[in-house]
Length: 250
Image (cartoon, rainbow, N blue to C red):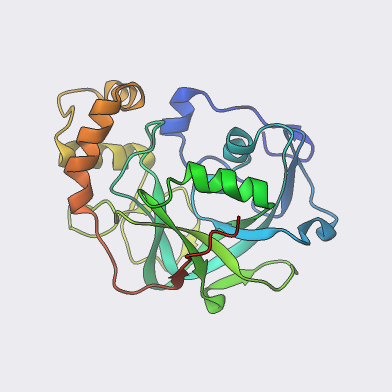
């Protein structure tokens, strides 16, 4: 699925929910023609906008879903310092509990940067529900470590407006599937995060997890009821390693 010149297999509805944030290559790659290819010519980065991917946007299958099989998207590895990637007190339309960066002193997270053209950035803005779920940000330069030589320029991204899903101890829950060092927070799988969200919101609490996710995927009223219940519980931080952008660069 993510080998050199391998065809990207689209996600099924169940995979979109339960497999979040999806498998991503460790190093640089190029999504082109619906395949994952080696990124050998870094000149393709010139003129593009660097956007840090903290969750599903790291993965070729999500990039394919958002941009389509004709898109060309170069991706390079990077480390985010003094933050962890945590489950958000929200739900995606496809039923997953999404994520965002949260300050965590001493933690390093292994992520990647998608290099987008302006049309792709506009599509990404639309998928991130700017103003409702996320805000467009510019990362402070000292928080990003590129793992290969790339053009020197700002790195942008998205940060949750809603806050983090609380654990039983009232702390953020880090994504178990994201590789990190020196974590401070408890980790949780997607399934565990769903269980916590279902219990806290008390929406569909009587349902099995499979049935709950299916309801969230298919019933907009249930989604909105869940969001109204869970959003006030979101954990916010007064520390930020980014600046909020008023210019959306499109």
